[in-house]
Image 1 (cartoon, chains in turn orange, yellow):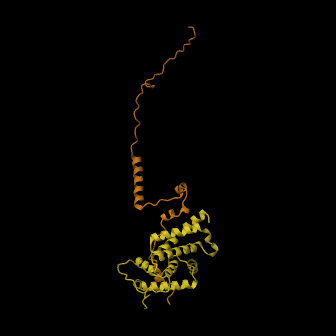
Image 2 (cartoon, rainbow over the protein chains, first blue to last red; image 1 turned 90 degrees about the vertical axis):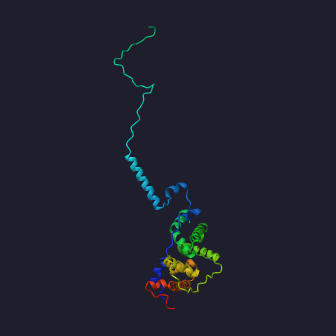
Image 3 (tube, rainbow over the protein chains, first blue to last red; image 1 turned 60 degrees about the horizontal axis):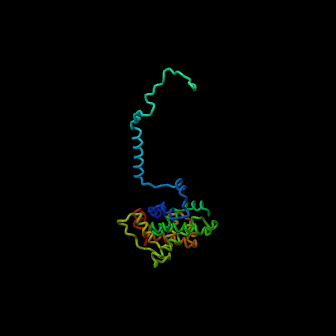
Amino acid sequence: MEPADDPKLRELLREWKVEEAPQRLRARIPALRQPWWREVFTGSVRVPGPVALLAAAAIVLMAVALLRAPSAKPPATRPSPGGLAGFQPVQVARVRIMESGQ
Amino acid sequence: MQDADFREAYRAHKDVVYRFARRMTGSQASAEDIAQEAFLALWRDRAAFHPERGSLRSFLLGVTRNLALQRLRGMWPQEELEDDCSVTAPFDIEGIQRAEIVARAVAALPPLQREALILAEYEGLSLEEIARATQAELAAVKSRLHRARENLRRMLAPLLATKGSVYGTSR
């Protein structure tokens, strides 16, 4: 009778690994579903590594491009016909009081 | 069991339930179906779990085991569940990866030996826990585990020999 604890057999058996429960399993169990607003705060999204790297690189490039862009000059303003362009204040103000009957 | 308890039970045991079903059936799709059914069964019949009789893990593994055996009976109705048969031929190891050979060897075990071996070797359950999960006597579990290891040593003899062992060669 061979020993119950056989390290060589055990080591060999450990070479067969299986994956963990997939994320989609959760969605198949109605009792685990939460309100959408709670999902927003507690949920997670799995993104493949290369896609995540590309997205991160794109964000960095966009940020650099925004920082390096020359600051735009404000557009020249044209005097509007009914505005106060050309207004000159009076030098001396003379007050004249008009009474009724004059 | 409240909603929060159920969510915690799922978080804590989903992987062990899925892995056990996956190794018992050899199929991802079947394992997902079985894991889903096991948790739905727990949710629907929460009163069936009695903490004083054993852990929630043992309970869930017992449910998973019953569902897996039902499915195996559906797939191979003629296959005997009986655990006293031997699988004698060593595997042809050329062209197959070692992990694949191990998976095939475990899959070749009779179901009652397979479940005892998976629970002991891969999930680390004690003999008592296996007996509880499989609703079997302790002596029966010991015997199944012994025969499962014996069968595996014979099937995997070529691989064990390449690792410097002489197990399984004394026929």
